[in-house]
Length: 253
Image 1 (spheres, rainbow, N blue to C red):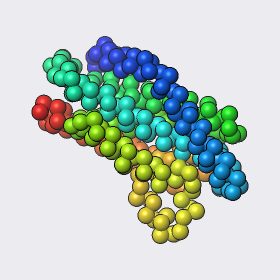
Image 2 (cartoon, helix red, strand yellow):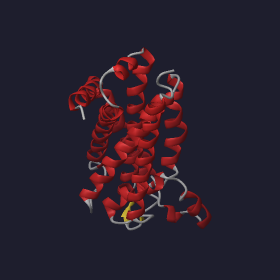
Image 3 (cartoon, rainbow, N blue to C red):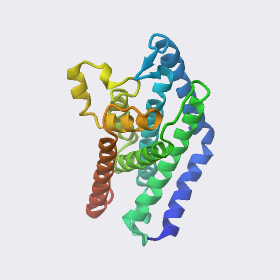
């Protein structure tokens, strides 16, 4: 493993993030505050508790997951798409580094950015509601795994995208709706039985459920199933990236 190459790519991507830190951090804080005003105050005043937790606190894990998933995907996809767009990706491919080192640099930076934003949102939430984290270590594990897995997905999207419109297509039309319909702002046990079954086909449900368990000790699905789901998702993304670099699909065209 060429750690110098990984570090160079990582630092280059992180510098771009720090140059726009105000925009990168202020936007999620404002969005989170609006969610708390709309969902926590307006809807929360009509819903006392969900699974023994105040509604304002109940939506915190979902809000963090929403931001982390979208930010990780967007950062990673733009990070690898831009070198494709300006043509510098060929210099990267001709350098004496493996695809694992390229992926580690770009995905590591995107995951770090998403992790920072997730922590900022968590800190912001403490100003609105009283939160007790039942399993801090599990919370960190789920947060880090989610950042890495969706950064890998974003990397794939960045390779696939042929223009800036396609770059935003999957995050806007697929990931965000799946998060909203994956129990971010409600427990799936509140749904009719038929819709509970349908919702279980949404992979995001398992991530949000496991992350919420780390906060409150309650989950819609088993914690073991949640860990298995995110591990499987990460492995699938890594397999696709390996195939992309092996075949040169959308890279050498």
